[in-house]
Image (cartoon, rainbow, N blue to C red):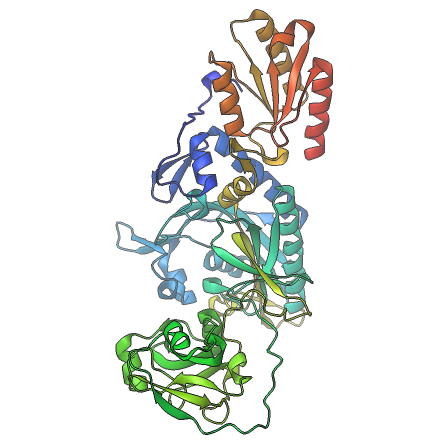
Length: 569
């Protein structure tokens, strides 16, 4: 491709609203352009990378035995109502009506559509298992689109759905997809971790893993063990229970003491000269509208996802001040577990305490010598907190360390969540109806572009790995007015392309500095410069990643490039 006629509108500065490095660089290098908040046009360079990622995904999905289809983006609301998700999914679901006043939604995901398809087309056990996938635009009305392609309202996604005879079959399908995802992200040259995760709005009855690309800009926190391969999203991460056990020691009856205007953990620890882990913190939540108390140590935070899953609730939120006052008899900041008549969820670290200080459920008062199990019940004890760095690993003697991560893929064991309610059943060998067992597997393909840039860049621009680069070689004649240089550049251009190498020829009449600056910004992995050595048939070979450069003959340069490109496939 000739750069003089190619749409590569580079910018010297990124727009002020661009925050993430990937967003800034892809805008500056002319890979994407914003149409509206969270909605982007892919320009030729960006589209080429997107197609490279798609190719890798298709190859690995086909290798794993999945079959590609394409489903409608616009979905009838009845399907979502039938599954029960039309209201539960929330405001992220983009809803619309046609001219006949029929309700539709723009698909953020396709569980309902694919389950209906298989329900209508597959009836015999002889047709199972089956795994169907598509690569398609998805729509989610994000509250705050940000970071360019990392959180948009319209994005490209690969979603796959497996249908099996039984749970053992689902297990095979799940791990086949898990392995395929590892190959996909490895081929995309990403540093990633597969972490245990919560199923979220997709739901399900089995395991789930998120594939996280490690990057400082990541919106997710990942807890990983320093000693074993345990890794989990903060929503799901667990820690080994504290070593302290309930001891038969004498603890005085709790006493009420005056704490005027002291509401926060910080104020209480400073006033009493104690550590936060000596405090018993009580928070009032509403679970599907019903009040519940969650009790954690003063140095810990409540994990609302764990609370929600424990209760089997659809929605959990922190209660407002009025509800807290009504339930505890005191304003926010003075709640405690002693004497509460609502369900009390006690974190296992609190249950292990000998005694502690809690709110007294009375304005300006707290209680000391509060003993879990004696002064409030422990029937509903479990893991209800966020882990913290330094916690012990739940699987070994290692400790937990935190990283930031970008979610690029997610695999779910759905079980019968959708097949049961939507009637996706098959006839077994005995002619009996059985419910299909489902799995769901997604990759944010457009998000992968940003994730690659977040990990592969420097102060001068992007550094595309060879397998996903928009072009393999950036061929730059220093002066297009020099006939010798242009003749050699054209010869190289034709020779490399004939060998299957993708080449961007910078045939613009620009100063060398401009060309080199644009080349670094765009980040094509190999740069060939045709300059003063052209008369002797020599060119400058430079690797974008390492910055190493050397003068080579045309033959040597072509041989090296062809070998590198073949090895990258």
